[in-house]
Length: 189
Image 1: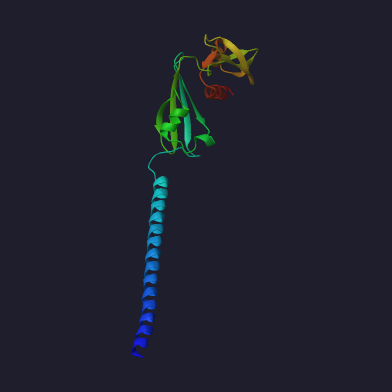
Image 2: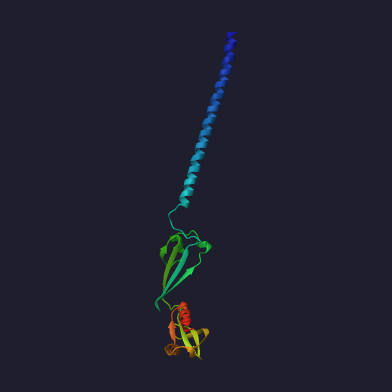
């Protein structure tokens, strides 16, 4: 009977040890899986952080894009602010340079990008303000300084102006931007 009891106890002890071994294997597998998953999560979080906290400046929808063009024939700089198009968003300085081949990037930050270009030509911002038929007329000038086209006939009568202003208008007043035209006309009103 002792032999049978030892065999039965051995059998149960074997099953018990087998189950403990299986549990240990499952725990080891679970720990390895959890550790790998945790390491992957940490690595992914670090990658996201690196992408979002990059110190490299990029264009965003609120960035001011300013184009400056220097015209050598008349020595004027025309500056215009351009709207940021969807294809420019998230561009780096190097990527913007590809978009603006032949331009110099003078400034590049998240808030402002300034591009500059020189052109051997005459700018389109030359105007002549002149008295004609008792009213003030505004003409666009060509490269030679000759009247190219009538831009505006104002309602301002020249007979009410001071003598010095009238003399200038008879001769013609040359101005170099639409803003200066508007300012000069306001002075006559």
